[in-house]
Length: 105
Length: 305
Image (cartoon, rainbow over all chains, first blue to last red; front, top):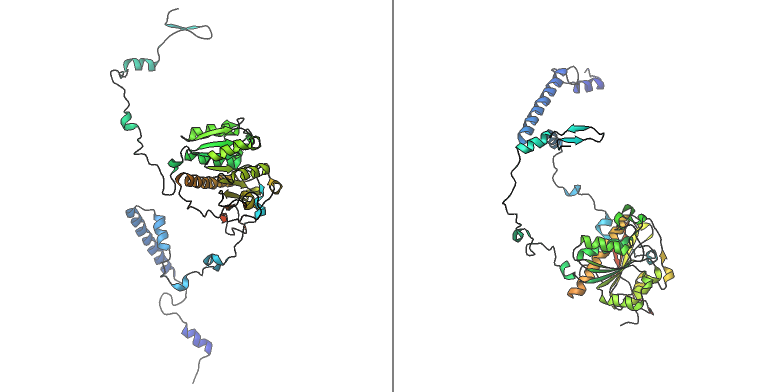
């Protein structure tokens, strides 16, 4: 049995599929062009939406770019520092009476 | 020379010509508003006391303090602001201070005085300022050092007063006034400390709290150090004056209405205000309330019941 070398097997396994991207894993110029066009169309839609709602475009775009709110998960709650959680545990500092005696009015 | 000729300063005579504006007004003179009675409708424009908001709350009603008497000893940085803030209550203020306002006092908001009061006695400047700005407040100016006022006069003043505010830096007079006033009237002593990093308000209530000596933990005047022209932030001075004025208002209200003070724990009669991060206030500026005890064998407060 003519077995292939291990490296050849790996090359076969990761070979890209046939089509415009078959020769190179990088995106073809046509794909980039299509992406730019879709971004331009999206921008036009955003502008139209901003004009309709009488709100600045920047705000709309910022809102869209924000990450979605995550559901509240108890694991994500920041741990409370023990100092702020239990101030009664802090030793009480008394007023130093000698510090009250250098005075001006 | 006829009225049509005008002599100019250089001696020449020119014919008088009416200006274009004069001619225009002659042709288009607006009709005089004659025959119309001018009347002021006082009934509708004058504010009535029923419609006026008085802004009182359940805890404080400043109208009840009108005409009450409060004695302020000292009109320096803290004292001038304190008297100015107390004036909003419509009180009669006895203010005692022997000095005059100098230019250095009005720089950077160090005191409540303004440039118009330079050269005046501090008490006179305060009288003008307070009575002009707060209707109902009256200032009785006493341009004397506290040491010049005799003990019977001081006692008379204290007996008439709802509270005595002690904002002087003369150690001997601080103790003299507090000793005289302890059995008679509430004393609020306010002072700033070195560099203005902190300040305190010591309150003595007759027969209830310890006297000022026990509160501050001192036995003689030499224990107190007097700082002259000490640098301090003006806003810290104002902060102390405002806090002390609020305590004086509570005490005066309590004496007028007979209601107990509920806004703070009266047994904690030393109020320490830190203006920076300190060991006692590690998170930043803050106010600490602390009680104090009558010391055994204190000649002022221990022998009293």
